[in-house]
Length: 234
Image 1 (spheres, rainbow, N blue to C red):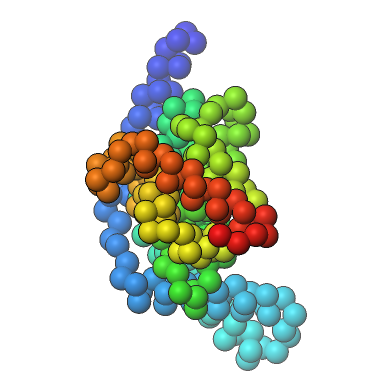
Image 2: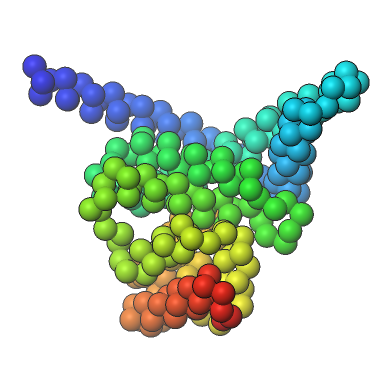
């Protein structure tokens, strides 16, 4: 009986996963201008919500409530447009032993956090920040549910530790000071451009370098960012 129940749960999970992937695949990509307008509406809505807690004027409250509503709608649009990033990151941690749907949920929570924290008037696009927080949410889940699970390699583990200790936009900004090859390898390996993380073999083929050279470049990049996180300079 227990075996049959397990099989039924697995079948249901596969069905739910297939439906989720199909739905996420339909999400339209946002233009840069749309992305920033949505992010601005989210921030304005959060500020309006804070003001609502202390403002008793009926006229002002009505306007603030409208801003909160628009901010909530904008958050939903921004989140749904970036769910493919959650899928790509969750798939990377499939070997952790945690169900894909649980990883997806953890990544989605990280995405919501990214939306609320994003500095829309800065110079960065949203995707790298989103990728950072999605992965941070999933890493927290992996460490919580499978503390013995290992990252795919030491550099990924090192980046995971940086993510847990440092503000995303600060390190993404610091990465621009890295030498070109080191930044290119780091960005592609860790998905900091909002794309799916690539293996060392994929990065080496794309850049026309050996796997060993790609590994060394990533190691130098991570060490430099670690110094930045600790208060040093690259």
